[in-house]
Length: 502
Image (cartoon, rainbow, N blue to C red; front, top):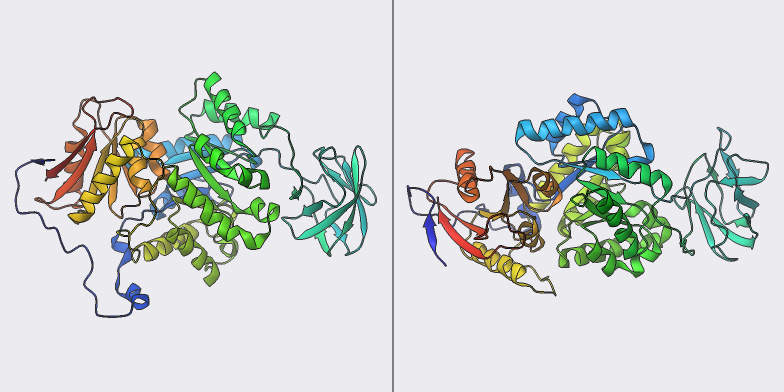
C-alpha cells in the first residue's frame, strides 16, 4: 500500500471534521441539527414519464430536482413521446455531464378485464358472477383478455382492482370460471386481475413485449424491466433475445411481483442485473401485511449479490392530487432508505399527477434527511460469496473508513468494481470513472455512485481528482482512495488499491 501525490500537496490531509458538531442530545433529536441539503443523496430516484411530465422543460426540471433515471411504462406505449424523452434525456446527460438512465418497463402477461360500461360494474358480497374469455361485458359475465382457465382451480381466489374486490372460484369450465364475490365494490374497464393461488406457466414475454423490446433496442435504452418474472429462465429468455439483437449491453431488471418469483427469488436475483420490489401486484399476489418483510428480504438478498434493488409503487401516492404527502408516505420512503435500497421509484405521481416536480423534490428531501442520520460505519451485512474483487472492495472501504476519507474512486470498464463498493454501503461517495458512455449512464441507478466520463487515453484517477478539486468536493491536501486495474479496459481486472494525496 502506498500514498502517491496526485499533485503538489498544499497542506496536510485532514482526517477529521466530517461529523457535524452537535449538542449532547438524544439520538432521535440530533436529526434537527444536521443539514442534509449540504449532502449528495446516495439513494437514487426513478421517475415514470407520462402526460404530466414529458415536455422538455419538465424533464430538465425533474433532473435538477433529483431524478437519476426515467422509466418508460410500455403498458402505455407512446412512440413519439417516448423517443423525445430518450432524446432529451441523452441531451441533458451530455450537457450537464451527468449520468441518467432510461428504463423500458415491459407490460408482461398482465391479466386484465375487457371493456365494461363507463359507469363500471358493481359487485355485491355473495353475488355470483362468471368470468370468461371475451373483449366486452355481457349481462352477468365479466370479460377477461387472457385465457387463464386451464390453470385455475375451484377454491382459488380471483382479485380485481388491485385486490380491492375478492372473488372465490366455485366452478371451472374450459373457457370460463364461476365465482362468488366475497365483498362489495365497483370494477372498471381494463383493470387488473390477480390470481394469488394460481401459477400461470406461460412465458413472461408476450407478443406485445417483443415489439416493445425491439423499440427499446432501437432506441438504445439502458435497462429493460421484465414484468411478472416467475423463475430465472424467464430472465434468461430475455437475455437470449437481447443477444440475438447484439444488445447484451442492455441491463435486465427483474420485477418481483408474484408468488412464484418469491419461491425462486435467489436464482432470479443472481440471473438479473437488478431487481425491483414491485409492491402493486406483489400486494395483491401475497397477503398485503407480508409485503414490508418481503421488501426487506429482497433488498438484503440483492445487496448480497451486488445487484441494484429498486422499491416501487405508491411511495407518494397522495401527491398525485396533493402538493403535500402523508406522514405515512414520508415514513415509507425513510424506511426504504434505512433498509438501503439503491433506488426509489415514482409511478403515477410523476406520470399522471399534478405535482411531478414537487414530488421529486419531496422524495429527495426525505432521502437526504434520512441519510444524514444513518451510521454507515457499522454494517452487519457482508456478502456470503467472497471473491478477489469483492475482497478488494472491502479492503478499500475499511481503509477509507479508518482514515475518515470523503471519496473513493473506482476506475471500471464493466461497473463491477463500483457495484462491489456500493453493495458494502460505505457511507463514502463513490466516483465511478469510465470511458464507456453506456456504462456511465447505467451506473445512475447504483447506490452512492457518481459517474465520471473520461477519455480512453486519460488517467481516470487524475481526471476525477481534478473534477473534485474544481468543484470543491475535496480540498487540496486531502487523501482519496482509488481502485483500478493495471491493464486498462480489462473487465474484472481491478487489482490495485492506492491512496492519493490531492
